[in-house]
Length: 351
Image (tube, rainbow, N blue to C red):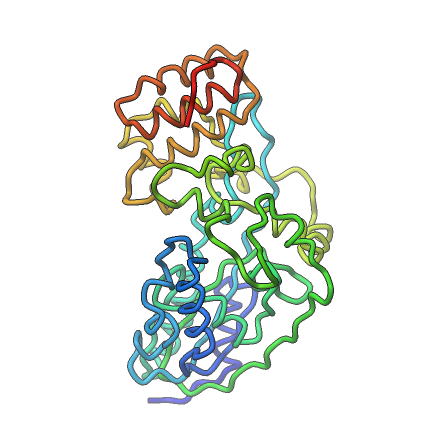
């Protein structure tokens, strides 16, 4: 076994394409575990499993790599210029989900793991995984601080980043944590369309649109109008955040290159989506988190977005809504009935 330094792993991570790299001790996240348990008991998780499923595991890196001593944490930026919105009824996709950014993140972290393996250490990549609370790892590794919307904000660069870690048995010198820089700002709290940020750093998933589009069952009636044109994710609390707005203004906002738009799903044609069969829909959007892997939930979100589109005079939209009102799936029929009423093309009672 040979020695490897923090500088070496950080240099390897940056060379692999990561935008920021830091190191934290692999000791259990005791305070985070207590927070997860407490919020789950209060119902704030809204049924979300992920790191809430097993807090003992997701807050203890040693459960993934026996003898873990360090975390090498990486951030990869995903903010890109959005393509122009088509002149049709379209649904909006949150920036992090427009492409598979986690594939690139895992690839870069794997190169760090290879360096550690080559030095004789155990190392495992975890990203977008219920095995570890990525944001807590990033905060401890000095990448940034917790914003009041609970996202990690990197100094001078904001929160438009996906996060992941390499858990390793190598003993590395930890990075210095970053102090809180939000101050008295509360724009994310005030800017949330459903009031889901109930206190600084506390999100009630039962009101959070980014979670509700991933939850099973009917989309809550009281939040359907607030969903607007979203069909996956919500960026509002990030878009109003001053560090993000400053970072955006520092970037070149020129028209995106063709390569930047390849496979970009910022906008989804709602009528087209609702015409797809299950196999086609899952082939196109199956990398999203879809409850029970059932395409009906993507259709549910699309029907709500269609109801909010204001296109009650569009024959394609009206035909699609009426067709789904007769669907054999009662959940989709209910959402189509709501959409019809919202578009003003039906007076039928909806639920």
